[in-house]
Length: 489
Ligand SMILES: *[C@@H]1O[C@H](CO)[C@@H](O)[C@H](O)[C@H]1NC(C)=O
Ligand SMILES: *[C@@H]1O[C@H](CO)[C@@H](O)[C@H](O)[C@H]1NC(C)=O
Ligand SMILES: *[C@@H]1O[C@H](CO)[C@@H](O)[C@H](O)[C@H]1NC(C)=O
Ligand SMILES: *[C@@H]1O[C@H](CO)[C@@H](O)[C@H](O)[C@H]1NC(C)=O
Ligand SMILES: CC(=O)N[C@H]1CO[C@H](CO)[C@@H](O)[C@@H]1O
Image (cartoon, rainbow, N blue to C red; front, side, top):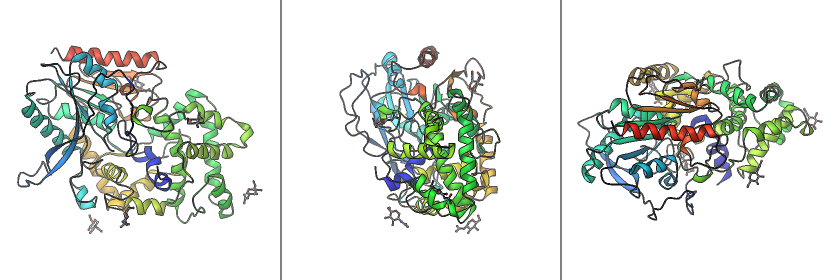
């Protein structure tokens, strides 16, 4: 992985990407070896579906090619069809060979499909990612893509009367729930894992959960993080400290703080180390090529508690260097102007095209989800909501008023927490900060929540391992029993 680009975009995963099933980087799955006992020997070649460009204009007949994958190894005639929904990153074919959904498919004789989300990976409806082109990127267009794909594939393969089940984790988890809600005649049931169904401009609860998740390892840990982050913010006020900070955090170029945005970006980048680790703590993501999965909450809190490294500030810097070493980064690019340059590059070859530019556009025009430091009950400092909202104007010319209106409209359209449907299960993990916007209590017996104590984002979707918590194993089994029961209805 080229490290400079990693520093500016890929490594800042949590800040705009909440993915569960995206390729971490192009090429990671080359040489991928299957980890579970899938008998299928077929390689899951990419295939292409002719899709409508704009589903909401009957006068617009333009088309483009959307990428999808098929695994027929488990299909038994008359069985159901499982559709894995792609999200805000390149769809990773590793999921066609491994993952909990395939163990369900094997037991239930299901045909498995995965559709890449428009504007991500190789599914490119437009020539570029200009703000004009991005108008065609929305969850509503994505759901209409799924509906059209479901209809045409069913016709072509004689699957119209089969029961279709949608799967997704994180943003695609929300899509899985909404697909069932908006197209009940096309989708029989959905598994909506770690799904933030409620849109919110400000999402300060995210960092509150980070506090609690760090505290669950060691009560002192978040306090030490807070101390470090307060010290750092204080030092940023004195330019005489910049040489030391540059060295301590191994920055690619000398720290420059000219505006509040520069400081906010730097502080947010460093907090991102903790946010990423908490969000994915001990998830079995290694199978899809994720690196650094051995850096856990325990490891970070171990460094923060190690007084031999110096004061909490020095330990915070040690965490940053540990993350860089683990991700093989030469240095940390903490410059907002570079980030702005990358995020406004509208080329498919640009540094934001891996998903950053597209996903932040979706947050600015649909969801918000800004993980601000506006709550007092969290360990970080210095990146308030106003800083994040301003990026919508900087990157896409979307104003704060437009953002607020768009988020309200999203909740009006999908209903937020107020879901009226049947046969949707909502697994969530107590460590995962995203559960704060998810369904964590049964709505009805037919809209159950599956709460998994001690697990992180999308844990139940990853392949099982011997070290999994017993409650994680139970959760996977619980979802299976629900599917088995719902497929009989
Ligand atoms: C920079 O670090 C050195 C060595 O730790 C220390 O002696 C010096 O006072 C620091 N400079 C500033 C401006 O804080
Ligand atoms: C994580 O794994 C890498 C590669 O296997 C290893 O070099 C590193 O020391 C490990 N880090 C920790 C904290 O266990
Ligand atoms: C966008 O990024 C690509 C690839 O890095 C680069 O070649 C191109 O010059 C950039 N475009 C602009 C307008 O900066
Ligand atoms: C930004 O948006 C405003 C109002 O929506 C519009 O008048 C203006 O022309 C836009 N600017 C650019 C550069 O697109
Ligand atoms: C159904 C259920 O138990 N949901 C839980 C999900 O997570 C939140 C936060 O940890 C719990 O409060 C809920 O009880």
